Image 1 (tube, helix red, strand yellow):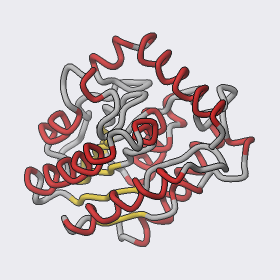
Image 2 (spheres, rainbow, N blue to C red):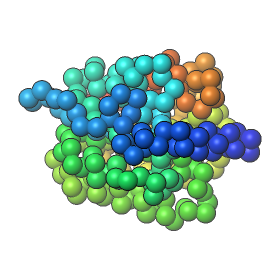
Image 3 (spheres, rainbow, N blue to C red):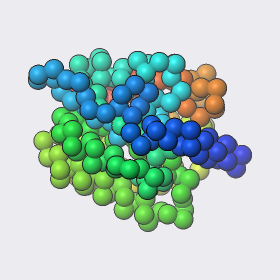
Length: 226
């Protein structure tokens, strides 16, 4: 990826964190990303991610891909995802760690979509990122042994890709395999070649982009019989 694009993303992420400190502290998404409102017997799905999963860029929370997927499947959604967050990057800014919050919800399904923002801590924090990926997936597997753990290839937002994207994808894929999680490949390219699916900020999916992600995710979840 060209340097100006990386600079633009870092600036946008910094602005998001600075201007949405309340959201980061409360770990809420565009609507209420905290505890799920559920009916008896309804499966609870928790989403562990960054702005792409939080829904930054949508015109209404209902258009967020995670919300579309949850509605289609009758899941109660728990989505504490935070803008600018990675397995390592910006993690020390959280008052409460998302992994702990998700474990406390005791969900039936956990979908992990983290990793995009960690590219901007590479290569300097490569070792820490690889370790954090394994630690997080180990925690989900150990603390939620009855939950279905689904790990998604980290999203990416431009057609140009730094080498770190594939490096982090490999770490995520290998860590998912080691804990016996389901793995969804290809997500880093789902929006590739379609600038019309990106919001005016040039970074986040718009309503059409989230619908595309939801449709692709539905196809993959069908293969996993979820």
